[in-house]
Length: 476
Ligand code: BGP
Image (cartoon, rainbow, N blue to C red; front, side, top):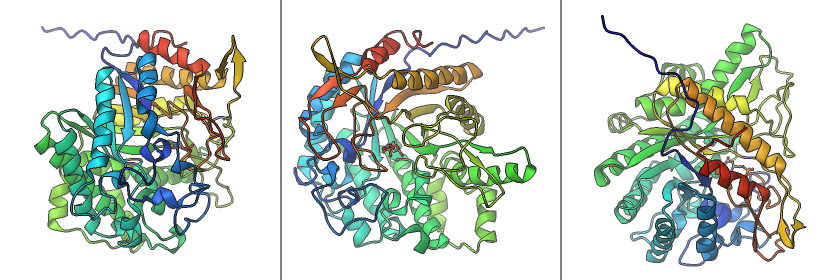
């Protein structure tokens, strides 16, 4: 009789676990109109998603300078290397490569910039993880084409991908197609370049745009596998577990429906077809969209792994009197048992374990936590003559979340890596503030644009370096 031995779980992070940090081009690079770059939708969003887009660029937009990564990338990457990063997630600004999105030829100066960034990463042995589109659709594609509502964007995106894969394919193994692709339901302009407020957009138009993005993502995956054998492509989902506010079955069903709205994106990326509950949602709400035979075939090209951001969980209720609270893009009904950050995002480390188990069991694809962190106001102090930030609150937040990643690994989830969000302070996506800081590295720049742009190591810098060096053993 054969005997099966079940190995005891070790709870350790696997060898080769990719520790690192994440940023996005529009939130760090600056140089918004140099190097041949065209405008992106971010150049008309000086207040993030809190106000309507402006007509053109305005000087109060902190992203025009960002944290000047365009000029200081070598210094910043050296600091990442000092922390021991194994991987660095960054995005390529589409409008640096195709200034108008529909140009006949790519902009060589833009490509050359990312060559230099990759040189620097290579020098330090840091693996790149590239987001192809991170909330920075070329403005022309939004204004002249209506953003992702227009089917033509699939071709423009595919051409952009082809240029990236041919140029960087031998140097970049890990790719993400669209940042937080499910966020387009809530923020059609920032996430989908759709220049129509959500209230004025019909559900059919919104889901048509979503369909175009999903087809584009699948086509990019297919193309990546053709051009770069060995490349791994992931989808990227804004993960937010939905708890029923009470044990009432009405609340439970409501929570399931809300969760489905995001699951749909992972289901399509991982299973290659529209799930039944989404087809039902379309039927029940009179939503009609165009799906061609070719689209159906394209969608069967599924991703290699699932990446996601995780900041918080939400509650859902069947009671229409329950009000939503603030949160990452979508927000939800606050959980009465949880504390919140200074920006009202509720803190729930165990929610990360819940999400990881959930995604692993649902899709059976390796997971990559590509965003997680605490946006907080930092106070610069001087210790031994060196400016620093005593950010124990950030250390606690990250420690508690990483412990839950370890729990999920122990539960059996296959996890490729973890990149904390805003490993160096960046301009916030939702509010466009610099005072909402996530980094291990403090950047001397303020919400009014003042500051030297000098970099200082926070207390969390040394803490993260030790976590990485010990492959998670120092977590408590
Ligand atoms: C995610 C985005 C990031 C990032 C992060 C933190 O939604 O992918 O771009 O900014 O959230 O959000 P915020 O900057 O609004 O604090």
